[in-house]
Image (cartoon, rainbow, N blue to C red; front, side, top):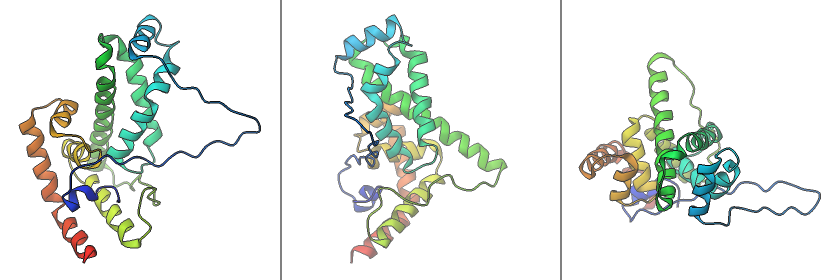
Length: 217
């Protein structure tokens, strides 16, 4: 299923994974070791010496951060820069996290906030400059059919025109597959506010549902 069609098909939200990164070529055997300890151990190391434990933090959360940014933005030329920004913010503010069982949700919140900030900046730039979209022409997760790729492109084009708050709510709910309560928590607002944002976003994408239904006939 193409990204963004969960809403169009009116099915239960389900997470969509980003494309796998190409494995680097190597002349010899390479063994990649990720963080295998607990979040308690990781948090203790980060509090003791954040710079020394930066690599461990990256190993633990790189997949989750990369996937969440991808699902919120879709294919985007600024993806890697945003991911880097996320990890810089994590290292700067990790001292605020005192409970290890809150570490993962805190990482997700920082990631959502970083994407939100980027979308807000893009909105401001559009007020003063007429710029080309930074979205790559090749949609990495598009379907093989031309119609599917076209619909996917229309979805992200519509999302690009939405206010940042509405887009984040829609993407978390229908692309990342989060439940309403978790969306509200990640966006740091009430459930009622999230429902209003989703209603507005869904109304703006209603015309795409009609296109999708026509394709399915």
